[in-house]
Image 1 (cartoon, rainbow over the protein chains, first blue to last red):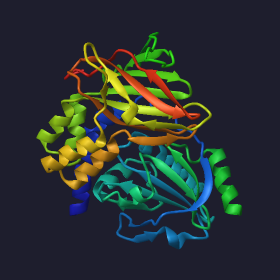
Image 2 (image 1 turned 60 degrees about the vertical axis):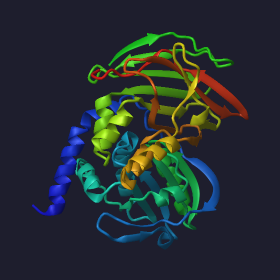
Image 3 (image 1 turned 45 degrees about the vertical axis):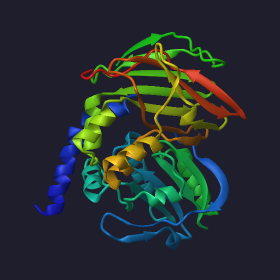
Image 4 (image 1 turned 180 degrees about the vertical axis):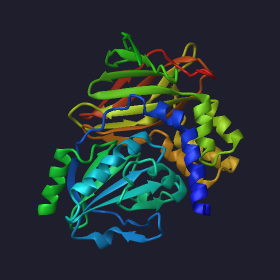
Length: 181
Length: 187
């Protein structure tokens, strides 16, 4: 067992220890909704971060694609609830000019690995590390989870605060509408 | 989950009168209070001292610093826009009232941040702390909701009424949750 997997194991043990805590916090949260708040288009702030494997990602390089930018953390119950639907959305739009960037705030790779290893399907989209929460501040995110939809020109055109069911038909339709533009 | 509904009238100045629903999670023993009024839903769920200690120690707080936070009365706080117009919330507008005490403001994230810096809490732990608290200011579009921790300087088992406030349609609105109770050391 290498150091990273041992550390991830320790992180998983910690997650399990904290399970009752998470259970308490998740109790009776509002249901995941599927609304997106459209906004007048405005340029998206810079988003240039490394993913779990150390590969750099730059939103500016994704012009020509519709991008779902999601700010989250493993300790945030609605973030945990909505993430599987983000993967389903990503799969539903596979092959189209669509990308998901999930920006984790303030945590390390081992903590995230321990969390995502609990999923039936490991996320295939990049999980980026905003360890100092500087990108989150630049995007003026006030709480987690917060999600932005960026159009092909690099403009924020919609947002959502709180957990969402990302593969809801209305959400998919809204994204497909942007893909046609 | 057992659900007890208490019909309590909120009275806070010009506050809208709305019922407070009370429930207890049979598994954790932790209680929640929720109300809906004028397009907003507000819910407070007890966080036990042990949960608060575990959460912050897992994020780099020393036992002593985590204990400082856990000595407060901590609630997971959820605000949801259930209406059809945007609402703007400012935590500084909230007050809580307990017997024989004047209304008090909720301790701000900035105040906590000052304390943690004095205590030498690491930056990564302070970042986790900041994002785990309920946002200081936030606008919720219809359907939006958020959650985070709020703290009240109350003893274990102490009872108080949180008075929440929000702006919508250019007006300040107010509401109250009644007879909210801090978690015991061991719920």
